Amino acid sequence: MQQSGRFIGAGGARGAQGAPGVRRRFLGRRRFLALLGGLWLGLAGPACLAQSASASPWFDAGRPSARSHEALALLADAPSHGLRAEDYGLAALHEAVAQAGRLPADAATAEALARALDAALRAYLGDLREGRVDPRQLHHDFEPPRRDPATDPAALLQAALARGRLAEAVREATPRLPQYEQLRGVLARYRSLAGHPAWQQPLPTLPAAGQRGRPRTLEPGGDYAGLARLAERLVVLGDLAEVDAAPWLAPAAPSGAASVVVSAPPHARYEGALLAAVQAFQTRHGLGADGRLGRATLAQLDVPPAARARQIELALERLRWTPALYGPRMIVVNVPEFVLRAYEVAADGRIELRLAMKVIVGQALRTQTPLLDEELRSIELSPYWNVPPSIARQELVPELRRSPGVWAREGYEFVTAGGAAATALTEGGLDAVLAGQARIRQRPGARNALGTVKFVFPNRDSVYLHDTSAPGLFGRERRDFSHGCIRIEQPLALARLVLRGQPEGDEAWLREALAGGRNTHVRVAQPWQVLIAYGTALVKEGRVFFFDDIYGHDRALDAALQRPRPASPRGPAPVPVVSPPAARP
Image (cartoon, rainbow, N blue to C red):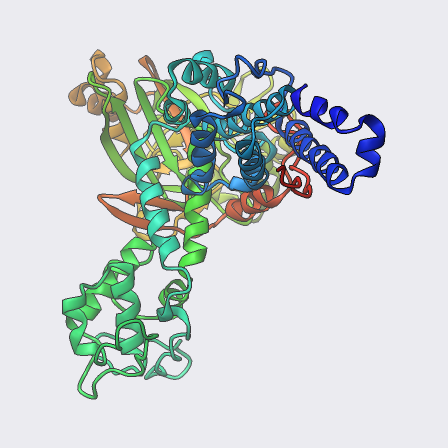
């Protein structure tokens, strides 16, 4: 070892103990190796890609190569993906690479640094490929898709090093979804707004309602002391063009000065472009776009850009769990948005939207819709509704005992363990249901809770997509009313899409079959994957939309991301803080 030889040549053990300068250099080297050891122990997995110092792509003539500096630049870009550079020991790696660059490193130092760089890059690629948090820790029904072994972090890194193109490994590991890159773009924008003067003061209290007992609300055409600040925020957020905001804004502050907007000109009213901007803002935040500025809209306006940036980071993490359409066709339900979309992959690889519609999901407080990923197997026309035992015990049986007329009106019947059906309501039948010896089902018909069509994708929670006998609820902005299943707005349109190419996919055939009212099962010939997902930030047509965290999943994910990295082959522990090595002459 070159450096050790220099120490010994200066006086052997006695020189290292006696000469202060040499002793400092010796201790500095020990700290340097401790630093690299900490990086290696903190990030390395069982498989090590590091090579000997002479063959390592990270070193050239004993100094860190261009690849080492490229690796640091890639790790420094982790925040653009919503990840933390400190999870990969970036600061310690920067110190180590800088120290090794001042004088050629000996073999042990070079090998330790090479291993640390390997481990950090593999951890980063793994997080991009699969997410920083294992989704199964948060959602027990969610199974991440199987990945192509060629995109394993170790394989990606090895191939990229062989080609001399590290950035290619990052591109390969990053989800290939347009939505992912669009969210990264708006993340950068919202981060740039952190600490913006427009949020330094809260918006003033809303005007009192004209009628006693009604909540404070700013109606279109009204006067409001906060019109100038409201206009300022909407300009910053992109809902109001700056040129259109002039009637509500005070003269511009001098260049570089903090915002001095206090009040709008005396004649300004809540109307015109400002009213339209509030409506656009309401649309982007899952609110009714009525232009009335009430408590809900004011609460969304008061959310600072930094909090929105975090919301976008959480959406990016969820997209890493399901990084691509891993089949040619997919149905995606975004729970907090209350929307279903059906996608297909075109021949040229583009992802094309085929259908979109409103949905009703499980109640937030009692019966949340689970997040899952299953294959659509069949469609049931004029379905029976087999009442889940929990609903029968807790809701239906008590209701039938209070109001027996519900039984015939809703078309219920008992089904015994042997499969025999009984249409008469009896106390014995209700007792059998409570004892688990019979079940209740609802016959097909106009009052059936599942409507006319049911989409079956077998899963542990017995959740499915279905029509509804209460379509009026689709007119609500917030639509968490079900017992866990998902009611869809356009069941026939979805049936025609998934049955396309089959005789049963013809609209005339479907309508004739439904008119007959006979329970019919149709197998889906082409595979469609059904993904029930959860994203509270979404880019649509170049505009970012935000939705309420109705199930609290964002809070849970945020807490998981804040915790120290769990022990795993990808990154078992945080990098320890170690003093930097002393400079060598």
